[in-house]
Image (tube, rainbow, N blue to C red; front, side):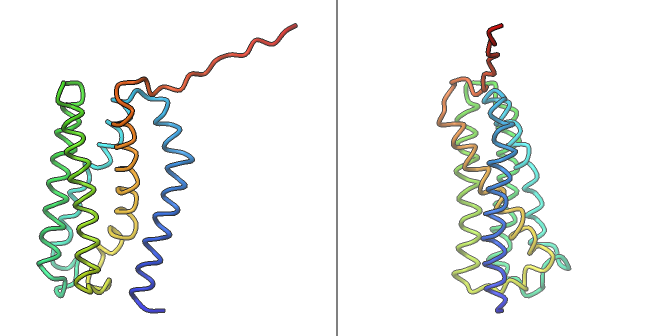
Length: 171
């Protein structure tokens, strides 16, 4: 099997498995939260995007990883981290939803651009070094959760809490 095929299969399986995990376990738990609390949880996950700085750390990635790919990927993730943290801080303000939209558009575009740049430049997955696991394991989860952030934003201020009603049993 080629390296490119192994990489592609890893990304597809990661998207599939994370999709199942999020749909089965994470989304049901988030639906029980208010929209603000659910967004706070997802934004906290994205606050760890600073680990994308690994793309510019020698020894973590191959010295052959092109700087034209590494720098935008690393700094794009750093910007996403700052936007996620600012969004958390602003969630209860009138600018909260706007800032979350900015974060989600930026964060999604950053991830998709990194994939595009890697594919377009013919970047060999071996050049990612240890950061290979960021691309094949973490990025798919981040993409999926961006989708759920947008879903929550589109719900507006409607209650996100699932109601649990007791059913009276006649005696």
